[in-house]
Structure formats: structure tokens, C-alpha cells
Amino acid sequence: MLVWYRKGSLALGALVFVWIVTGFDMNGRSVWIKDPNLSPVNETQMFLYDTFPPEFLWGVGTSAFQVEGSQWKDGKGPSIWEYFIQSPLRAGSMTDDDSSDSYTFLEKDLSALDFLGVSSYQFSISWPRLFPTGVVTAVNEKGLHYYNRLLNSLLHRRIEPVVTLYHWDLPLTLQEEYGGWKNESLVDIFSDFAMFCFKAFGDRVKYWITVHNPYLVAWQGYGTGIHAPGERQEGAAVYTVGHNLIKTDQCPTQSGEQGTVPKAPPNEMPGAEVTHFTCQLYQEQRYL
Ligand SMILES: *[C@@H]1O[C@H](CO)[C@@H](O)[C@H](O)[C@H]1NC(C)=O
Ligand SMILES: *[C@@H]1O[C@H](CO)[C@@H](O)[C@H](O)[C@H]1NC(C)=O
Image (cartoon, rainbow, N blue to C red; front, side, top):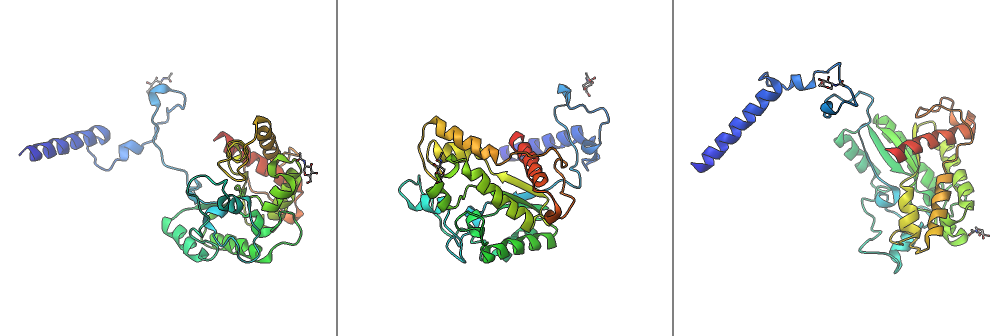
């Protein structure tokens, strides 16, 4: 009886709520009616209801080290994360197991994106998969083929690619020879890598992100040491790393439209404009 009573009150409560919100037309339509007087700065209108615009990108994202697996396959070079995780520096129970091994099972992951019905997919390019030592010389063709296949498959499925150039997996050689991001030389070396990516993939990629979460790269990588490369340095080194990471976003020109697709094919486009484009996107990312 008590149980019935409670259920009854609950049902009545829900009915009253529906009535208050919709005026009993039961299809929720009144909630979605646009109020022409809505103001974003009026505190009495804190809760705004609206539909998303059709061009809104619904998406999911990954990073290369976390999903690609196949860390030692097809000519890929080691990154600081493989080294870190296998060394005593590593914190907790991190492993570099093959995870979902997206490098091998790409089709399955693409089917998963179809299943989710997303309109965008953010992934990162593994720098050492394209250039095993980090320096832009001969590209690792198998790595290049992998990213071309990924991009073409996304576009075929009408899924917009959003590409991160650096999601923490620095080629190990650059850590050993230069001391990683502490060294300003990395800015130019990264720039060569970025330019290669713009030229190779820019005909299909509208949205680029330069460095994923530079704060964590600097602080956890070089300050606390709980992320790769696991260095525990004084503040100055951390700030130097942050400074160099920010320089990867340097804006050599003021041309180019913010947040829009570069218009000319990338091989005809001055590099400066592309860099400016990524800079704008990156600044937005930092403020969001
Ligand atoms: C704020 O919104 C409320 C409710 O829509 C409205 O009555 C009020 O006039 C608005 N105030 C200002 C300053 O626009
Ligand atoms: C940067 O790397 C070069 C080449 O290894 C080295 O000569 C130089 O001392 C390094 N600079 C810093 C600040 O570590």
C-alpha cells in the first residue's frame, strides 16, 4: 500500500511537472519555442533552450599512443611514452599494451564511429610513425599510407576529421639528442613536421590542432615527472618547455581567415598562412 502510495505520488508529481512545463500538450514543443527577447546577459534567463545548428560537429576523439597500438610495427620509431612506460620512471599501472590496436583494426573502429553516428572524429598523428627519428627526411611510407587510409575512410563516411599534430608522443631520438621540449631547436623541427602534414593531408583536413594540452606536457612531463619524459625539474625548465610549446603556434602573418578552410590547395599555399590558421584554432582551444 505504502509502495503504491509512493508510486502514485510520483506519477502525480510527474504529471504536474509536465503540465507546468508544456501546458499539457505533451510533446514538449513549448519548451523549444524560441523567445525573440532572450538575452545572453540577463540573469533571469540563465537557462536557454535551443536546437543545435546543423553544422555543429558532434564528435569523439582519441590520441595515437592511446589507440593505435602496433608501437613497433611497420617502421614506426619509439616515442618518449614507450620508453617512459617501460622504465622505472613510470607512475602507477600504466602499460603500453596494444589497446584497441587501431593501427591493425582500423575498419572496426571506423564502424564504431558509424554506429555512434558522429559527424567528426579527432585523432592525433603519431610523429614517430611518420618520421621514426623525428627529423623530416624520408617519410615512413607505411605510416603515411595509414593516415591517408584513415582520412579517406572518414571522408567517405562523411565524418569530418579534426587532426592533432602533437598529442605527447615525441620521437624518443629528439628527447635523447636535444633534451626534448626544453630545447628551442624543437620548435623548428616540429614546424618541419607540421608543414609536411599540411602538405600531405591538407587537401582533406579543415581543422588542425597543434599541441594537445601543453600545460600537461610542460608541468607533468618536466615538473612533477608523472608523464613522459618523466623529468623532475625546477620551475625554470618547466617554463622553458611551455614557452617552446607556445612557439609552435607562432603566427608569421596576419593573413588567412580565422577558423575556416584554407582555400587554395595546400601545395600552392604559402606555409605562413597555414601556420596562422593553426594558431587561431589553437588559441580558441586554449580559451574554450
Ligand atoms: C530579463 O528577462 C526577463 C524575463 O524574460 C524580463 O522580464 C526582463 O525585462 C529582462 N531584463 C532586462 C534588463 O532585459
Ligand atoms: C639543444 O640541442 C643542441 C643539439 O643537441 C645542443 O647543442 C644544445 O646545447 C641544446 N640546447 C639546450 C638548451 O639544451
